[in-house]
Length: 396
Image 1 (cartoon, helix red, strand yellow):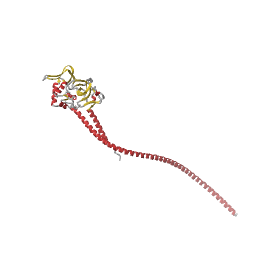
Image 2: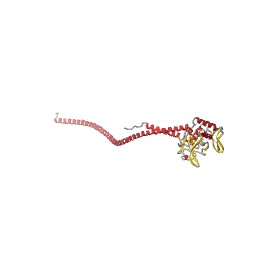
Image 3: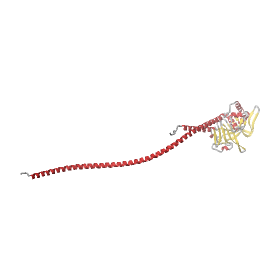
């Protein structure tokens, strides 16, 4: 059977159709697979995009935080700048104050140098006063004993021979021999209230009541440690023998008088004690006598009625008994500012090493002045040491 062109054409058409179908099928199948791949890639891209968006959001958030931090730092920088400007202003003020302080310091150093010179001058004056006080204390110590001279030794021998009567030492007898053997009589002090030394009293042949008391006190120190009864005299019935010269058959005595025992020199300290006297009810003037007491006076606190309750008094110019503490006499005590104005109040005491004077409501004495001067000297030395120690220099 012959093949017709139409059949060939149809066959070709059929083949073409089949081929196209196959191609379409293959193409469809390839497109579907590719579409799946593309879909997968698209999904992956979307996922990456979402991740990128998330990262972008995080970056944006971090950027916002950073911008906020930068804003805070800008505020802090602004505050620091303002604070710095304030501190710069304060530095300017401090520099001005420093310059002023430097000027004041220079002036202070000049003043300090002048003050140190004044301190040196005061210290030298204080040392001189301290030395004068020590010499005064030494003076009282030196005049607490009678000097060892031929004239004094003869006088002492006369006292021991004529005034020691058994175990009694007749004080009126000593007063008599002070006149008869040494020529001592009462003499007003032409210089006022100067205290004469024992040697000057002997040379002057007497003195005022202070001089008699100072001399008699020194004499009684000769009898310390001896077992004798010190005897004064007082008004009474009979006559009181003062001194007897058996060779000349002479007797000195007081009428209407009797002896008055005062105590043993082993137990007693003699002091010169002064008070305001009274005549006819009127304050007349100061007078000094001898005070005997067991109390050892070494400071102002020792001078009061309680401590001197056993004190007895006698007149060194004639040996007469004058009274007792808290009866005829009283001692002024520290703090009693009006005491020194009263009569028969003890306001002046001479010991073997010092002189005590009551004034302005207190007892003043050389040792106390010396102690206070020593404190002043110590303070002056401390001030000078502190001032001379190295301190901060002057800023340049």
